[in-house]
Image (cartoon, rainbow, N blue to C red; front, side, top):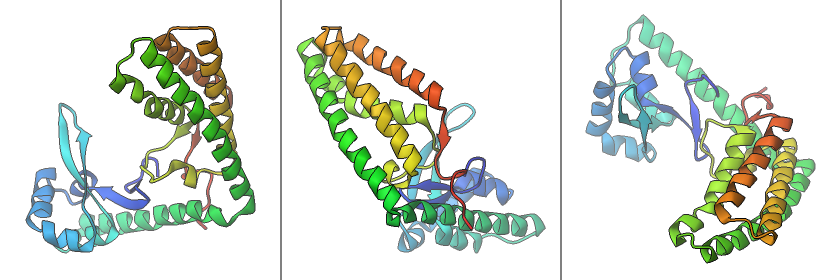
Length: 237
């Protein structure tokens, strides 16, 4: 997945129009113009996925196509040797990433995975309770409602970014983690819940509590190391 052509978005394998344009030896604007022109055709195949990606000087609009949408787009371009080679390379990458995703989601039939998932859910509920207590605590100390309500998402994103190398976008990240990764995330959540409650009991200022939590998760991640999601730990054979 890393350094590949295809990525995962909401459990679907997709390739961006910028990579496709480069492979077709076309300007990105030429490719997106065709997507816009045949928008209804692409939508009949599958919903178009749109993101704003970072360019050298500014963000730009990019479409992410599934394999069938790419195949339709490919019919709109003339072939030469380099385009044919790129089409084959991208189709093989779709096949590879689909295999990785299928294997990851297939873990749900493994009793070991289900036990790890159940344990992780129990720990998650305890951590969620600690975060909710912290949100109320922060509001009582003068934090804005909007800002405090973001702590739930911010703490989760912070933890995931420190523990995992994950380039795809998944409907539920935990559904594709290995049993070992589920155990790691459970341990990290125990660190978070304990840190929040200890600091609240000591009447630490809420902004400092969040900083303390981040430092402890950073230390935890440093000891355990980051692990890649899907790309290395799962075989596609």
